[in-house]
Length: 295
Ligand code: PGA
Image (cartoon, rainbow, N blue to C red; front, side, top):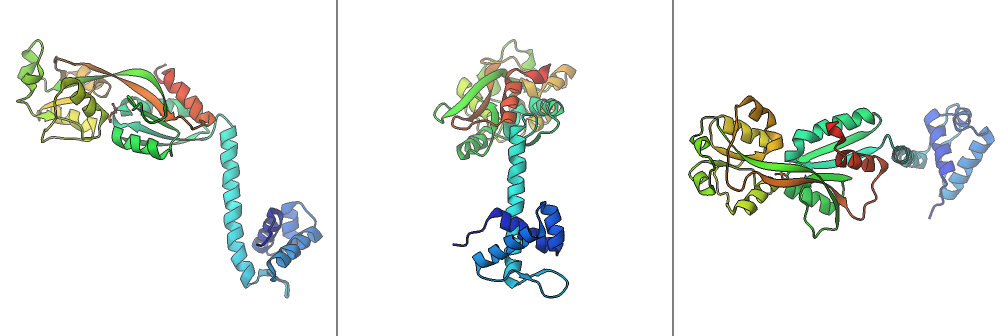
């Protein structure tokens, strides 16, 4: 095994890049003989010359060129690691890897915008997907935090509920069903029922609570598109009230009074039990739990 030291690799990289022992010694804040010594020892450890010293310019030998490539990668990896550690240690910076249920879209972007304003040095990657894919991501454990509807209890997760999520039935303002004081599930059966895709937590909950099995021809994997479809008169939709606030206010969509509804579900902030959260993830978790994005 070749015994490299980091000091030797840094010296070698600097000499080859700057093509000068003098410039390298200035860059590394060590004397020129000390740089020579590092490279001599490195050459001895490897058992080959690494630098051509004949002529005016300093160039790498064939083996030196190969080693130089690795030096660039090693040094860049170490620098990246150092910056990662600095970010983790500085609670106002750091990187947040977060995934959220499609339906949380109505408040998560607002929450992240406010949190980023308060923590301008932080960066984040946000993934928006349905419940089933969120569970897969939690299984692979490559996320800091997940925001989702009721998490399963058999997965060693740490979970904290923070907000209600009322699921409602929506209809076009001219739907005859709006005349009924309360619709039964049977009343809906002859309508075109527009549901979320299989794997959606919204769909799973509605099927569980009402006993309905959606065998509809119309499945849409976006709440916004379901709302558009209802507005266009395609049929009856099932969504979280959070996703349709504006349309209900303006009256382009109506909430249908229906047996079992609103179904009350909760939003949770979740992570794997064994994960120690980074300072920025801990801050974001508290920000969500305290609903600071509403303030
Ligand atoms: P979604 O919602 O998967 O339907 O987007 C998440 C949930 O309520 O679990």
